Image (cartoon, rainbow, N blue to C red; front, side):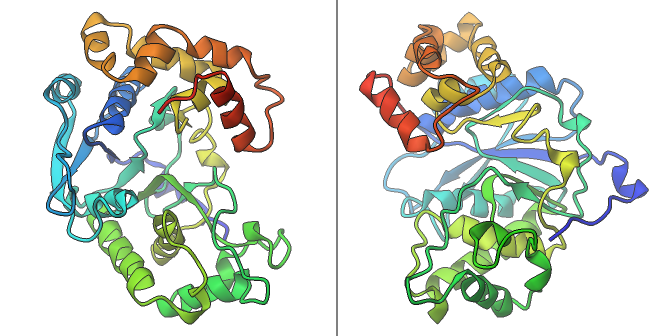
Length: 336
């Protein structure tokens, strides 16, 4: 579905909040890179920078941020807002981003996965929060139509019909029928909308309905880990949004880098993202904290990530990510 033309009124930059989720372990150290790179590249940001912290009985372990990490984040003027998982939790941690929105301010927002580093200003982008969108840095991971049907059209259409949403207008008619890119499908690495609470409420509603009352057309489909990305296009459509236009090319581009793991960052991402990560951990007060996390300690501080970078031609990378991962593993440099 083509995005609406941006009106002059929408072009005026609104105040909005930036949100990520972090908890004890890998995510809290990624949050340090996230926050420090954001503050470095967005010094004039007027909104709230929020780290959502999950907790509650649906976790079998302590999810709270460690005190050293908490102190570092607070020193960068971050708001840490806790939330109890009522629906998902340890059984489906990807649901954190869905439930976290419910306790956020009911204001325009943009959410990023914590494994994101900033290399430019969000204010350089023309974001129309009344026309939500999400990351197109994705592969055709869902659905996997069975040999004898139903196909992509029948699977996706039944979901739009369930929630009373228009289906045909979401199709990219430049792509062939029954080819996965014809259908609205996002990576949930970033997404934005006009009201975090309402967006989250609707996302929970759609995701739980799909999971607990699965349409017959989806009987053969797997929802772990894809449930959030199955429901996300439906939520975005319900708010009148769609695919991101060229005005948002800086996301997953010159403004943000969703690197996913540090070995993949060194293998395939642009130099500016790597330089930003190295700059983020340079101060001694930061090094003292992040060296507790082996991938940052070894790849960034000890510069072993440079060995990974030398293993690949960034202008001619393997098509399949698994080939990159296996090459790094053979060199005994894969870590997460």
